[in-house]
Length: 294
Image (cartoon, rainbow, N blue to C red; front, top):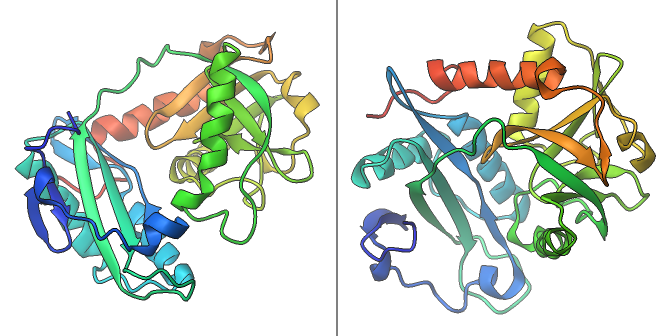
């Protein structure tokens, strides 16, 4: 659906059809990978359509622009309203919203302050809650450096290659390690394991600062579930009581096995399942969302 030319997109201050968009071929984002993006989910509830943690997503985009020296011409609230109007113009309810911030034209390596905001949206149907994951462990490292915490286009080619290799081996996804050989994250999601009724997840020095990851930390604190953020050796994964992944796109998904080692607990008996149920409650009630838009 997102490839149809008649789809309405937000392009540099106006809502236009996709075929009307003309991207400058000299944008630094094309040549040097300086494009920032976000992925935001909207859900249909009994009270209207809600955007999951929209302000947090746009605040992260804004912070990334500051780090790269790019001038973002829109406030967080303005971007939330653009996302809402985009859903309305495309008659969307349960959808995926993709804002992309690109830098201005220049073939020099000097940072370019000028930027261009594009925002797209398309219908998205969530995977069934019972859809489980069998994970591998990749030889590839997660992109490191001081820009690793940004949702930057240049950080993702390594993850794409790791995912392709994992799929060839029969895995649903794979776990990337950091430069010291500890668990970092999946190719596009964060990872939690459960051991002795405690949740364990890699620290932000290693893992991407995922917004659904942070939501799980908030839920666990509210439910008085102990959480430890620390480095995880790959061997620990094979001895986990349970495991689950978190991302905006797929929510909270159960892991049944890692490198052919099944986790011990049934999904319904795990802390991950409890987190999933709490997260689904937020989806149904609109808790933690930007607000109704339709």
